[in-house]
Length: 242
Length: 319
Image (tube, each protein chain N blue to C red):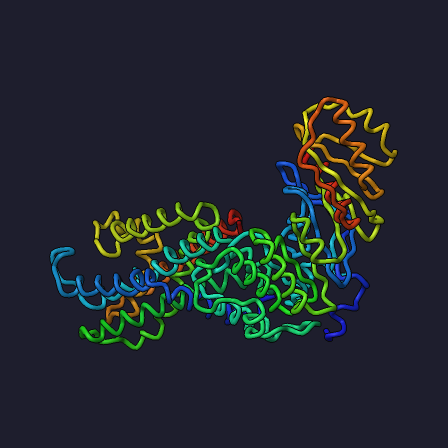
């Protein structure tokens, strides 16, 4: 049984604990905003300046992956090491409430980081579309798509290993995930079936005036849902609470 | 479910264990325990690996038994958990929950969590617990000393307002004064109708707690003060030459006197009768006849329960 009251208290606690962490601020706010400015104001990446909608989609994707995967994996792994997860087992919270609150806390972090990014984008001259209100839907789908893998890492490996691996994967995704650097069609056709590019495509649909076609949107949603279900099933099977 | 229903449903006992077993894949655990716990304090004692933490974690619902059953007020721990009713407040031995939070933040968060839960005993306020346990308000949990952490864990267990309290080795790492202080605070803040289970491997804690005592050995109940009758015992220890042939001394003393060489040259004598000057002279004379010098003679009397339990645990250590 999930109690909405307990869930909201636990989500608020998780969010506040993570939001107070200065490393999170760096990962979720500072790095994405720097990427936004670099993409739109310089030609360092790709030899030309990106349009604001594209850059905004890129940056929202980066911050969502940072919150939903890297931060979630590292925080959960260290909570497992400090036996915080076992401690939660001694409270009135159910396991479902503990996990759901962690995911919702990450979603709120992604929204929090997204708000900062959107404010900077507005300052830089971005004109929002009426679909902007659907961006939270993209963020929650993004967190869901990678959250299961964050739990899988955190629940099976030592905290120090999770710290190294989660950050390593994050850097690899930035470099080769197709969200900052673009690749040829053949590689992009493969990458669009992975959460990073699928999430970027979905967000791009909601922040730009261009319509990539409903097929692309449906495909992106399906990719995110399938990866999310697979990741959570694996985590459910292999996660160790201590 | 009404407040009264919480404790009066099917069993007069707060906790009932029937043939309770949890055998770990690599061996160890507990085996076929039959125990009932009612209101009051119960000390669970035993050497490392005796099964104390396993028993307490089973009662807390943190582990599932491999055999037998456990019930809290007549229902399984999972029943209460799925009903969202917290029947057990727990302070675990290991771990440092939420190291980057402050103790007062943790207690306020737990206070929120339990604010609307159904319960049958009164719940202390955060301010009361901070004051009673002398908790620091500014230091982060990761920077707390061992004693401060133990006190915080006890406060966190109490704030649930649960009728059953489990404290796993709350005095581990504390000095004698710290242990006494902690038990004094617990006596002050734990409601009288609560069922309090405290595990410890420090036998002196039993004197301070003054409640029921259960000793576990190799996962089984070796002693239960509710069942066994405690016997007053007198002890004499001394140091001498190793491997003295003790048959002559045994013949010289009463039949109920137990004499053994615990370690190399360290001897222990247990007697149900007081050890007086004549008794000590007999021992000294015997050793002199055997050509052995005697030093570090120590004579003491202890309460029956403490003496019985110490004997049991020392036997375990010798094994």
